[in-house]
Length: 102
Image 1: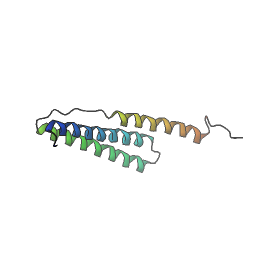
Image 2: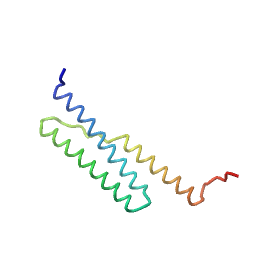
Image 3: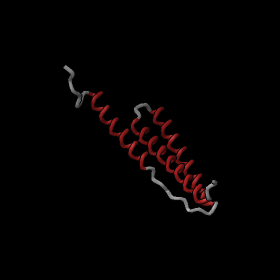
Image 4: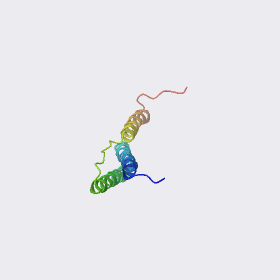
């Protein structure tokens, strides 16, 4: 049974949310990256996913739908986790806060 246009709009809203998650996740990875080339790549990916989400939202608007603007909660949480992990790894690598295994 085919879905309605509203069903498709909801499904596409989920795609927008995934794009926003990826945008935030790559932004967090860029903040945590130690190598500038890697950070630049992650920034590029973050921007690309942000553009994808914006283009999809504009397409929905042009069809008469009012798309939601999801924040990408999963991506924000993941980006936060990457930042925490980078902080802890930095402490371990510098010797601060590291435990002895002996």
